[in-house]
Image 1 (cartoon, one colour):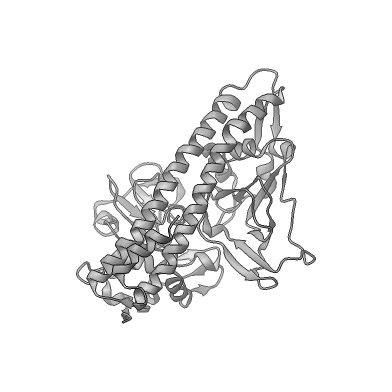
Image 2: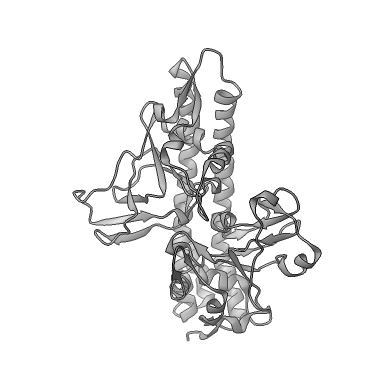
Length: 404
């Protein structure tokens, strides 16, 4: 038997609230603040690095987050990002949230926040959010419309059971993420040791454009593809592609122009400090990225060198300072090409680095593909559990037999 449906606002503990506005000039000290960057980079927000902002005692009473608060993106550069939902799962110190976000705090006697987090990240939930998105200069939602959305309302014990089942898959995904942080951290540490701290006299200084091409391959009308597997900038965070949308050829967004090849490092040119990037290894010929990305294709340097050089925190911080524009500051792709790196006089050193570090990046990519399979399984389970097609008691057995 399927669930009944209710207006989302009927499940609130208190009215939804937009966050605080804090200009960049006052940031640096104070309380941690969840910004749009953290929302898009982390679906489950815990102890992570954030900007710090001043917060008065009165503001603290109204704007500090509590465990299992839901956060929704009020605005996004692209339609797909509007209304994106993350969940705050607690931290060791107080955390607040910025004005581009909507906080929803559910009544714990009526609703399980994790269940609704999974709902709004499912196809059903995204379709519901899309129905209230307004497209003006940027796509966005209003808290009043969010409260009126009709959402499934199974009994509370069933909500908790479903959230537990889906959470087990997310725990596996999180384990892969931590493994990848270790693997890629080792590669970047070696790059820093050899080519930053250990750069020798007599080595050249090369721009990335001397070692790689930028946006060298563009989708054209003559390309014989029957479908487009499209990657939007809102779906990418710190090496991970959260979703790949498939379109029939000719129906893809106009932004679907960047064709990808093995070894490409792909970085967002919009708000580059958010560290939205990914590494392309053995892609299908149908994989196409948004024009919001800069695609860096190695030609002189091996792909591991380029990827390690461009995905260090120092690079993103510097690019962020160079970005300009309004709500969504951006850089030109050629700015990435101007980034300079030390280049040894003996290519054998670069080759040795590639042999040491390419397996680390490759293992991380295998973990990401396994995580995408787990995420697809998670997303496929939710509507079946809500409708009653798959009984909750059978779901764990199904997961055991289906997950990688």
